[in-house]
Length: 199
Image (cartoon, rainbow, N blue to C red; front, side, top):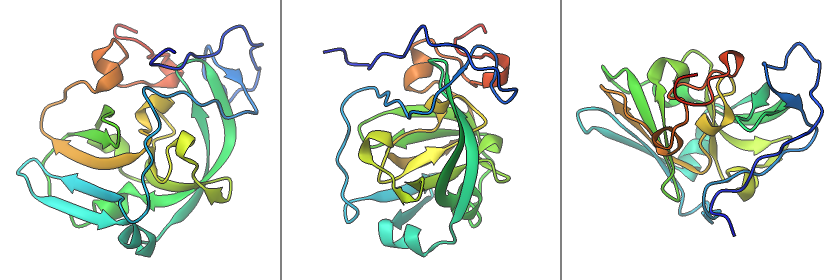
């Protein structure tokens, strides 16, 4: 069995002008993961934000559910070339989580249950661009899609929307996460086809 599930090849390309270059439209929600799906119960789940000086903020599942949540409809784009339009999610804006966090950091390293990491500029998590999502299409987010909660950053390739999110580490200097260290692009803009280093 492969450690990394494979992408999809050879499907017809869609012609919707909402599709970034090189993407095809799918009505499915393909499951692509690095490693096994971790099983995290709500009572075990915790989200943390750590600042560059070591200050740590934490939320239990109950804490997260008590925060104001938003329902958003967004298009998502996978680096393996599929795109899914008008997906509906419910979650807590990262703006809400960081509202009382003092930081001078410019970057974030996102950590997941299971050990996955991905790096992003902090500005890409702010101003209504990112959420910690716990529902998809009106139902609890299923484990294979990152439940109980995942990061949702729909304007970047979907590997940046880390499944099974557990922490956001705010850092002064950028460094590569899991896929980035294996040659994926540090930023991952689907409209610029930033799939791999050098794109």
